[in-house]
Length: 169
Length: 292
Image 1 (spheres, each protein chain N blue to C red):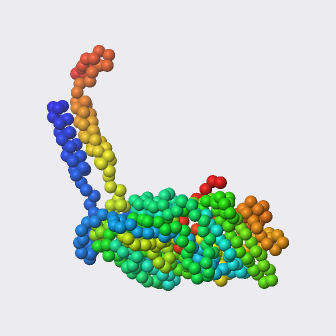
Image 2 (cartoon, one colour; image 1 turned 45 degrees about the vertical axis):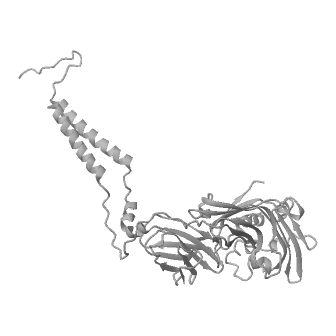
Protein backbone atom coordinates (compact mmCIF):
# COMPACT_ATOMS: atom_id res chain seq x y z
CA UNK A 1 0.00 0.00 0.00
CA UNK A 2 1.41 3.35 -0.95
CA UNK A 3 0.50 6.73 0.31
CA UNK A 4 -2.03 7.97 -2.19
CA UNK A 5 -3.08 11.38 -3.32
CA UNK A 6 -6.38 11.52 -5.18
CA UNK A 7 -7.25 14.84 -6.71
CA UNK A 8 -10.58 15.54 -8.31
CA UNK A 9 -10.73 18.25 -10.92
CA UNK A 10 -13.92 19.63 -12.35
CA UNK A 11 -13.38 21.00 -15.78
CA UNK A 12 -15.59 24.11 -15.53
CA UNK A 13 -15.49 25.38 -11.95
CA UNK A 14 -18.83 26.24 -10.46
CA UNK A 15 -18.00 26.47 -6.81
CA UNK A 16 -14.80 27.54 -5.18
CA UNK A 17 -15.51 25.12 -2.36
CA UNK A 18 -13.02 22.33 -2.00
CA UNK A 19 -13.26 19.16 -0.02
CA UNK A 20 -10.84 16.47 0.90
CA UNK A 21 -11.24 12.90 1.87
CA UNK A 22 -8.53 10.72 3.23
CA UNK A 23 -7.90 7.04 3.32
CA UNK A 24 -4.44 5.79 3.94
CA UNK A 25 -3.16 9.12 2.83
CA UNK A 26 -5.58 9.25 -0.06
CA UNK A 27 -6.75 12.79 -0.62
CA UNK A 28 -9.48 14.05 -2.88
CA UNK A 29 -10.22 17.58 -3.86
CA UNK A 30 -12.86 18.93 -6.18
CA UNK A 31 -14.07 21.99 -7.97
CA UNK A 32 -17.58 21.62 -9.29
CA UNK A 33 -18.11 21.71 -13.04
CA UNK A 34 -20.27 20.17 -15.69
CA UNK A 35 -17.77 17.35 -15.87
CA UNK A 36 -15.77 15.80 -13.11
CA UNK A 37 -12.28 14.59 -13.68
CA UNK A 38 -10.72 12.46 -10.99
CA UNK A 39 -7.01 12.13 -10.91
CA UNK A 40 -5.64 9.49 -8.59
CA UNK A 41 -1.94 9.58 -7.82
CA UNK A 42 0.38 7.99 -5.35
CA UNK A 43 2.27 10.35 -3.13
CA UNK A 44 5.28 9.68 -5.30
CA UNK A 45 3.36 11.14 -8.23
CA UNK A 46 2.91 7.73 -9.80
CA UNK A 47 -0.64 7.40 -11.14
CA UNK A 48 -3.07 4.93 -9.60
CA UNK A 49 -3.64 2.94 -12.74
CA UNK A 50 -6.85 0.95 -13.09
CA UNK A 51 -8.21 2.03 -9.70
CA UNK A 52 -11.88 1.19 -9.20
CA UNK A 53 -14.18 4.23 -9.36
CA UNK A 54 -17.85 4.16 -8.34
CA UNK A 55 -20.14 7.16 -8.73
CA UNK A 56 -23.39 7.43 -6.75
CA UNK A 57 -26.14 9.89 -7.67
CA UNK A 58 -27.87 11.91 -4.92
CA UNK A 59 -31.18 10.11 -5.34
CA UNK A 60 -29.76 6.61 -4.89
CA UNK A 61 -26.75 6.29 -2.61
CA UNK A 62 -26.73 2.50 -2.69
CA UNK A 63 -26.80 1.76 -6.42
CA UNK A 64 -23.84 2.84 -8.54
CA UNK A 65 -24.79 5.49 -11.09
CA UNK A 66 -21.59 4.85 -12.96
CA UNK A 67 -18.62 2.57 -12.52
CA UNK A 68 -15.27 2.45 -14.17
CA UNK A 69 -11.53 2.38 -13.83
CA UNK A 70 -8.98 5.11 -13.86
CA UNK A 71 -6.83 5.18 -16.96
CA UNK A 72 -3.06 4.78 -17.14
CA UNK A 73 -2.69 8.37 -15.95
CA UNK A 74 -4.92 7.73 -12.93
CA UNK A 75 -7.75 9.79 -14.42
CA UNK A 76 -11.47 9.16 -14.57
CA UNK A 77 -14.06 11.57 -15.97
CA UNK A 78 -17.82 11.62 -15.70
CA UNK A 79 -20.57 14.12 -16.37
CA UNK A 80 -23.22 14.16 -13.66
CA UNK A 81 -26.90 14.41 -14.54
CA UNK A 82 -27.68 18.05 -13.68
CA UNK A 83 -31.29 17.14 -12.93
CA UNK A 84 -30.10 15.14 -9.95
CA UNK A 85 -29.19 17.85 -7.48
CA UNK A 86 -27.69 17.14 -4.10
CA UNK A 87 -24.60 15.28 -3.00
CA UNK A 88 -22.90 13.18 -5.64
CA UNK A 89 -20.51 10.65 -4.17
CA UNK A 90 -17.38 9.31 -5.80
CA UNK A 91 -15.53 6.33 -4.39
CA UNK A 92 -12.02 5.46 -5.52
CA UNK A 93 -10.49 2.18 -4.41
CA UNK A 94 -7.38 0.21 -5.15
CA UNK A 95 -5.69 -2.68 -3.38
CA UNK A 96 -7.84 -2.44 -0.30
CA UNK A 97 -7.50 1.29 0.16
CA UNK A 98 -9.75 4.07 -0.93
CA UNK A 99 -11.46 7.36 -0.48
CA UNK A 100 -14.98 8.67 -0.83
CA UNK A 101 -15.80 12.28 -1.50
CA UNK A 102 -19.05 14.15 -1.82
CA UNK A 103 -19.72 16.83 -4.41
CA UNK A 104 -22.72 19.12 -3.93
CA UNK A 105 -24.39 19.74 -7.26
CA UNK A 106 -26.68 22.66 -7.84
CA UNK A 107 -28.28 22.77 -11.26
CA UNK A 108 -28.20 26.52 -11.63
CA UNK A 109 -24.46 26.42 -11.15
CA UNK A 110 -24.11 24.18 -14.11
CA UNK A 111 -26.25 26.47 -16.26
CA UNK A 112 -24.33 29.57 -15.27
CA UNK A 113 -21.03 28.01 -14.54
CA UNK A 114 -18.86 30.45 -16.46
CA UNK A 115 -20.48 33.52 -15.08
CA UNK A 116 -20.42 32.02 -11.62
CA UNK A 117 -16.77 31.25 -11.95
CA UNK A 118 -16.07 34.82 -12.99
CA UNK A 119 -18.16 36.15 -10.16
CA UNK A 120 -16.15 34.10 -7.76
CA UNK A 121 -12.92 35.33 -9.24
CA UNK A 122 -14.08 38.93 -9.18
CA UNK A 123 -15.11 39.70 -5.65
CA UNK A 124 -18.59 41.23 -5.79
CA UNK A 125 -19.13 44.39 -3.79
CA UNK A 126 -21.01 43.96 -0.56
CA UNK A 127 -23.87 46.35 0.37
CA UNK A 128 -21.55 47.97 2.93
CA UNK A 129 -18.87 48.55 0.31
CA UNK A 130 -21.43 50.00 -2.07
CA UNK A 131 -22.74 52.29 0.68
CA UNK A 132 -19.26 53.57 1.46
CA UNK A 133 -18.64 54.20 -2.24
CA UNK A 134 -21.92 56.10 -2.60
CA UNK A 135 -21.23 58.22 0.48
CA UNK A 136 -17.71 58.94 -0.77
CA UNK A 137 -19.00 60.14 -4.15
CA UNK A 138 -21.62 62.39 -2.57
CA UNK A 139 -19.15 63.80 -0.07
CA UNK A 140 -16.65 64.38 -2.84
CA UNK A 141 -19.17 66.31 -4.89
CA UNK A 142 -20.31 68.43 -1.96
CA UNK A 143 -16.74 69.05 -0.88
CA UNK A 144 -15.73 70.14 -4.36
CA UNK A 145 -18.68 72.49 -4.60
CA UNK A 146 -17.91 74.05 -1.24
CA UNK A 147 -14.23 74.44 -2.15
CA UNK A 148 -14.99 76.42 -5.30
CA UNK A 149 -17.66 78.43 -3.50
CA UNK A 150 -15.15 79.34 -0.78
CA UNK A 151 -12.54 80.46 -3.30
CA UNK A 152 -15.01 83.03 -4.70
CA UNK A 153 -16.08 84.34 -1.30
CA UNK A 154 -14.32 87.39 0.22
CA UNK A 155 -11.79 86.39 2.87
CA UNK A 156 -12.38 87.43 6.49
CA UNK A 157 -9.80 88.76 8.86
CA UNK A 158 -9.23 86.22 11.55
CA UNK A 159 -8.83 88.93 14.14
CA UNK A 160 -11.48 91.47 13.26
CA UNK A 161 -13.90 89.16 11.54
CA UNK A 162 -14.46 91.64 8.76
CA UNK A 163 -13.77 91.81 5.12
CA UNK A 164 -10.25 92.57 3.99
CA UNK A 165 -10.44 94.80 1.00
CA UNK A 166 -7.50 94.57 -1.29
CA UNK A 167 -6.11 97.95 -2.21
CA UNK A 168 -6.83 98.85 -5.73
CA UNK A 169 -3.78 98.96 -7.79
CA UNK B 1 -25.39 80.97 -6.51
CA UNK B 2 -23.77 78.99 -3.73
CA UNK B 3 -27.00 77.06 -3.13
CA UNK B 4 -27.34 76.25 -6.80
CA UNK B 5 -23.81 74.88 -6.99
CA UNK B 6 -24.35 72.69 -3.95
CA UNK B 7 -27.65 71.47 -5.35
CA UNK B 8 -26.03 70.65 -8.69
CA UNK B 9 -23.20 68.84 -6.96
CA UNK B 10 -25.58 66.82 -4.81
CA UNK B 11 -27.63 65.94 -7.86
CA UNK B 12 -24.50 64.78 -9.68
CA UNK B 13 -23.51 62.73 -6.65
CA UNK B 14 -26.88 61.05 -6.44
CA UNK B 15 -26.84 60.23 -10.15
CA UNK B 16 -23.39 58.67 -9.89
CA UNK B 17 -24.31 56.83 -6.69
CA UNK B 18 -27.48 55.50 -8.25
CA UNK B 19 -25.55 54.23 -11.22
CA UNK B 20 -23.09 52.44 -8.94
CA UNK B 21 -25.80 51.02 -6.73
CA UNK B 22 -27.92 49.73 -9.55
CA UNK B 23 -25.13 48.29 -11.65
CA UNK B 24 -24.57 44.55 -11.58
CA UNK B 25 -21.39 42.68 -12.37
CA UNK B 26 -21.35 42.09 -16.07
CA UNK B 27 -20.88 38.43 -16.67
CA UNK B 28 -21.05 36.57 -19.91
CA UNK B 29 -23.86 34.13 -20.32
CA UNK B 30 -22.65 30.58 -20.28
CA UNK B 31 -23.29 28.79 -23.51
CA UNK B 32 -23.96 25.21 -22.64
CA UNK B 33 -25.67 22.50 -24.53
CA UNK B 34 -27.58 21.62 -21.40
CA UNK B 35 -31.28 22.22 -21.69
CA UNK B 36 -32.55 24.67 -19.14
CA UNK B 37 -33.61 23.10 -15.87
CA UNK B 38 -35.41 24.59 -12.89
CA UNK B 39 -33.18 26.60 -10.59
CA UNK B 40 -32.47 24.32 -7.67
CA UNK B 41 -30.69 24.94 -4.43
CA UNK B 42 -28.10 22.53 -3.09
CA UNK B 43 -30.05 19.91 -1.29
CA UNK B 44 -28.76 17.23 1.01
CA UNK B 45 -29.58 13.63 0.41
CA UNK B 46 -33.08 13.81 1.71
CA UNK B 47 -33.89 12.38 5.07
CA UNK B 48 -36.73 9.98 4.67
CA UNK B 49 -39.61 9.94 7.01
CA UNK B 50 -41.37 6.77 7.89
CA UNK B 51 -41.25 3.68 9.95
CA UNK B 52 -38.33 3.21 12.29
CA UNK B 53 -35.72 0.73 11.20
CA UNK B 54 -32.75 -1.01 12.80
CA UNK B 55 -29.11 -0.02 12.75
CA UNK B 56 -26.62 -2.74 13.52
CA UNK B 57 -23.28 -1.48 14.81
CA UNK B 58 -20.45 -3.87 14.04
CA UNK B 59 -16.74 -4.18 14.76
CA UNK B 60 -14.45 -5.79 12.22
CA UNK B 61 -10.85 -6.92 12.64
CA UNK B 62 -10.83 -8.21 9.07
CA UNK B 63 -9.14 -11.41 7.93
CA UNK B 64 -5.93 -10.32 9.63
CA UNK B 65 -7.58 -11.09 12.98
CA UNK B 66 -9.84 -13.93 11.85
CA UNK B 67 -7.29 -15.88 9.82
CA UNK B 68 -4.04 -14.53 11.19
CA UNK B 69 -1.34 -12.63 9.37
CA UNK B 70 2.30 -12.70 8.46
CA UNK B 71 4.04 -9.67 9.88
CA UNK B 72 6.37 -7.52 7.83
CA UNK B 73 9.30 -9.23 9.54
CA UNK B 74 8.10 -12.76 8.85
CA UNK B 75 6.27 -13.73 12.04
CA UNK B 76 3.12 -15.81 11.60
CA UNK B 77 0.66 -14.32 14.07
CA UNK B 78 -2.59 -15.95 15.12
CA UNK B 79 -4.98 -14.13 17.38
CA UNK B 80 -6.88 -15.87 20.16
CA UNK B 81 -8.59 -12.74 21.42
CA UNK B 82 -8.70 -9.08 20.48
CA UNK B 83 -10.76 -7.39 23.15
CA UNK B 84 -11.97 -3.85 22.68
CA UNK B 85 -13.99 -1.77 25.10
CA UNK B 86 -16.35 0.47 23.12
CA UNK B 87 -18.07 3.45 24.63
CA UNK B 88 -20.41 6.24 23.60
CA UNK B 89 -20.80 5.31 19.95
CA UNK B 90 -23.04 7.56 17.88
CA UNK B 91 -24.28 7.51 14.29
CA UNK B 92 -25.06 10.74 12.45
CA UNK B 93 -26.98 11.89 9.43
CA UNK B 94 -24.47 14.59 8.76
CA UNK B 95 -25.20 17.52 6.46
CA UNK B 96 -22.84 18.46 4.98
CA UNK B 97 -21.17 15.05 4.86
CA UNK B 98 -18.51 14.84 7.53
CA UNK B 99 -14.90 15.11 6.45
CA UNK B 100 -12.58 13.73 9.15
CA UNK B 101 -9.59 15.43 7.60
CA UNK B 102 -11.16 18.82 8.15
CA UNK B 103 -11.57 18.06 11.84
CA UNK B 104 -14.42 19.24 13.99
CA UNK B 105 -17.62 17.37 14.66
CA UNK B 106 -20.31 16.06 12.32
CA UNK B 107 -23.14 18.55 11.77
CA UNK B 108 -26.04 16.22 12.37
CA UNK B 109 -29.69 16.72 11.62
CA UNK B 110 -30.26 13.30 13.16
CA UNK B 111 -28.05 11.33 15.51
CA UNK B 112 -28.61 8.12 17.40
CA UNK B 113 -26.75 6.44 20.20
CA UNK B 114 -25.37 3.09 19.07
CA UNK B 115 -23.92 1.88 22.32
CA UNK B 116 -23.08 3.26 25.74
CA UNK B 117 -20.57 0.63 26.80
CA UNK B 118 -19.71 -2.75 25.34
CA UNK B 119 -16.75 -5.11 25.25
CA UNK B 120 -16.26 -7.18 22.11
CA UNK B 121 -13.74 -9.76 20.93
CA UNK B 122 -12.76 -9.24 17.30
CA UNK B 123 -11.34 -12.77 17.16
CA UNK B 124 -14.64 -14.34 18.16
CA UNK B 125 -15.87 -17.16 15.96
CA UNK B 126 -14.03 -19.00 13.23
CA UNK B 127 -12.15 -17.67 10.24
CA UNK B 128 -15.35 -17.36 8.26
CA UNK B 129 -17.05 -15.19 10.86
CA UNK B 130 -17.81 -11.75 9.58
CA UNK B 131 -17.95 -8.58 11.62
CA UNK B 132 -18.85 -8.80 15.30
CA UNK B 133 -22.18 -7.28 16.27
CA UNK B 134 -21.72 -4.70 19.02
CA UNK B 135 -25.30 -3.56 19.29
CA UNK B 136 -28.53 -3.15 17.38
CA UNK B 137 -30.70 -0.10 17.89
CA UNK B 138 -33.93 1.29 16.44
CA UNK B 139 -33.37 4.34 14.27
CA UNK B 140 -35.28 6.72 12.05
CA UNK B 141 -34.69 6.12 8.34
CA UNK B 142 -32.09 8.09 6.43
CA UNK B 143 -28.47 8.02 5.42
CA UNK B 144 -26.12 7.65 8.37
CA UNK B 145 -22.94 8.98 6.84
CA UNK B 146 -20.85 9.64 9.96
CA UNK B 147 -20.05 7.72 13.09
CA UNK B 148 -18.08 8.24 16.26
CA UNK B 149 -17.00 5.98 19.07
CA UNK B 150 -14.69 5.89 22.03
CA UNK B 151 -12.34 3.22 23.23
CA UNK B 152 -12.57 3.51 26.98
CA UNK B 153 -10.96 1.63 29.84
CA UNK B 154 -12.85 -1.41 30.99
CA UNK B 155 -13.75 -1.99 34.61
CA UNK B 156 -13.61 -5.75 34.97
CA UNK B 157 -11.91 -8.90 33.82
CA UNK B 158 -8.96 -8.76 31.47
CA UNK B 159 -10.03 -5.32 30.29
CA UNK B 160 -9.97 -3.77 33.76
CA UNK B 161 -8.09 -0.51 33.26
CA UNK B 162 -7.44 -1.30 29.58
CA UNK B 163 -9.08 -0.26 26.32
CA UNK B 164 -7.64 -3.04 24.15
CA UNK B 165 -6.04 -6.41 24.91
CA UNK B 166 -4.49 -8.55 22.16
CA UNK B 167 -3.82 -12.21 22.85
CA UNK B 168 -2.17 -14.55 20.43
CA UNK B 169 0.82 -16.59 19.38
CA UNK B 170 3.59 -15.51 17.02
CA UNK B 171 5.74 -18.10 15.27
CA UNK B 172 8.85 -17.76 13.17
CA UNK B 173 10.94 -20.76 12.29
CA UNK B 174 11.40 -22.72 15.52
CA UNK B 175 10.54 -19.72 17.68
CA UNK B 176 7.15 -19.40 19.29
CA UNK B 177 6.09 -16.43 21.39
CA UNK B 178 2.70 -16.41 23.08
CA UNK B 179 1.81 -12.81 23.83
CA UNK B 180 -0.67 -10.61 25.65
CA UNK B 181 -0.46 -6.91 24.86
CA UNK B 182 -2.50 -4.44 26.89
CA UNK B 183 -3.23 -0.87 25.93
CA UNK B 184 -4.77 1.70 28.26
CA UNK B 185 -4.73 4.78 26.04
CA UNK B 186 -8.32 6.01 25.75
CA UNK B 187 -9.23 7.34 22.32
CA UNK B 188 -12.14 8.84 20.41
CA UNK B 189 -12.71 8.34 16.69
CA UNK B 190 -14.79 10.54 14.41
CA UNK B 191 -15.37 9.03 11.01
CA UNK B 192 -17.22 9.81 7.81
CA UNK B 193 -18.92 7.48 5.39
CA UNK B 194 -17.91 3.85 5.18
CA UNK B 195 -15.62 3.12 2.24
CA UNK B 196 -15.66 -0.42 0.96
CA UNK B 197 -17.19 -2.85 -1.47
CA UNK B 198 -20.67 -2.17 -0.14
CA UNK B 199 -22.43 0.96 1.02
CA UNK B 200 -23.37 1.05 4.66
CA UNK B 201 -25.61 3.20 6.79
CA UNK B 202 -28.49 3.72 4.35
CA UNK B 203 -31.59 2.90 6.35
CA UNK B 204 -34.89 2.54 4.52
CA UNK B 205 -38.18 2.95 6.43
CA UNK B 206 -38.73 -0.23 8.41
CA UNK B 207 -35.48 -1.65 7.07
CA UNK B 208 -32.12 -2.64 8.44
CA UNK B 209 -28.67 -1.17 7.89
CA UNK B 210 -25.27 -1.66 9.38
CA UNK B 211 -22.40 0.56 10.37
CA UNK B 212 -18.88 -0.67 10.99
CA UNK B 213 -15.87 0.19 13.06
CA UNK B 214 -12.95 -1.41 11.24
CA UNK B 215 -9.54 -2.11 12.75
CA UNK B 216 -6.51 -2.59 10.54
CA UNK B 217 -4.03 -4.81 12.38
CA UNK B 218 -1.64 -4.75 9.44
CA UNK B 219 -0.91 -1.19 10.53
CA UNK B 220 0.53 -2.58 13.74
CA UNK B 221 2.31 -5.70 12.54
CA UNK B 222 2.76 -4.97 8.85
CA UNK B 223 1.97 -7.34 6.00
CA UNK B 224 4.56 -9.86 4.87
CA UNK B 225 2.69 -10.38 1.62
CA UNK B 226 3.57 -6.96 0.26
CA UNK B 227 6.97 -5.32 -0.28
CA UNK B 228 8.74 -3.85 2.74
CA UNK B 229 8.93 -0.52 0.93
CA UNK B 230 5.15 -0.13 0.77
CA UNK B 231 2.68 1.16 3.32
CA UNK B 232 1.84 0.01 5.94
CA UNK B 233 5.17 -1.84 6.20
CA UNK B 234 7.15 1.38 6.16
CA UNK B 235 5.39 2.60 9.29
CA UNK B 236 4.37 -0.66 11.02
CA UNK B 237 6.14 -1.93 14.13
CA UNK B 238 6.17 -5.58 13.10
CA UNK B 239 6.68 -8.31 15.69
CA UNK B 240 10.47 -8.53 15.84
CA UNK B 241 10.88 -5.70 18.39
CA UNK B 242 8.22 -7.36 20.56
CA UNK B 243 9.84 -10.80 20.32
CA UNK B 244 13.07 -9.33 21.63
CA UNK B 245 11.49 -8.19 24.88
CA UNK B 246 9.80 -11.54 25.56
CA UNK B 247 10.66 -13.18 28.88
CA UNK B 248 11.00 -16.97 29.13
CA UNK B 249 9.60 -17.31 25.65
CA UNK B 250 6.47 -15.28 26.26
CA UNK B 251 5.43 -11.66 26.28
CA UNK B 252 2.94 -10.09 28.66
CA UNK B 253 3.16 -6.33 28.55
CA UNK B 254 1.10 -3.25 29.13
CA UNK B 255 1.95 0.19 27.81
CA UNK B 256 4.22 1.22 30.72
CA UNK B 257 6.14 -2.05 30.30
CA UNK B 258 6.43 -1.53 26.55
CA UNK B 259 7.65 2.01 27.13
CA UNK B 260 10.28 0.69 29.50
CA UNK B 261 11.48 -2.23 27.37
CA UNK B 262 11.12 -1.12 23.76
CA UNK B 263 13.57 1.30 22.24
CA UNK B 264 12.37 4.89 22.25
CA UNK B 265 11.93 4.79 18.48
CA UNK B 266 9.92 1.56 18.55
CA UNK B 267 7.72 2.80 21.38
CA UNK B 268 7.06 6.03 19.49
CA UNK B 269 6.21 4.00 16.40
CA UNK B 270 3.72 1.98 18.44
CA UNK B 271 2.10 5.09 19.89
CA UNK B 272 1.78 6.59 16.41
CA UNK B 273 0.15 3.43 15.08
CA UNK B 274 -2.47 2.89 17.79
CA UNK B 275 -4.80 5.74 16.82
CA UNK B 276 -4.41 5.01 13.09
CA UNK B 277 -5.73 1.47 13.37
CA UNK B 278 -9.39 2.51 13.47
CA UNK B 279 -11.25 3.05 10.19
CA UNK B 280 -14.65 2.82 8.59
CA UNK B 281 -13.85 0.16 6.03
CA UNK B 282 -11.05 1.83 4.11
CA UNK B 283 -12.08 5.31 5.15
CA UNK B 284 -10.02 7.17 7.67
CA UNK B 285 -11.14 8.71 10.92
CA UNK B 286 -10.15 11.67 12.97
CA UNK B 287 -8.48 10.34 16.10
CA UNK B 288 -8.53 12.15 19.39
CA UNK B 289 -6.45 10.94 22.31
CA UNK B 290 -8.40 11.22 25.50
CA UNK B 291 -6.66 12.26 28.69
CA UNK B 292 -5.91 9.47 31.08
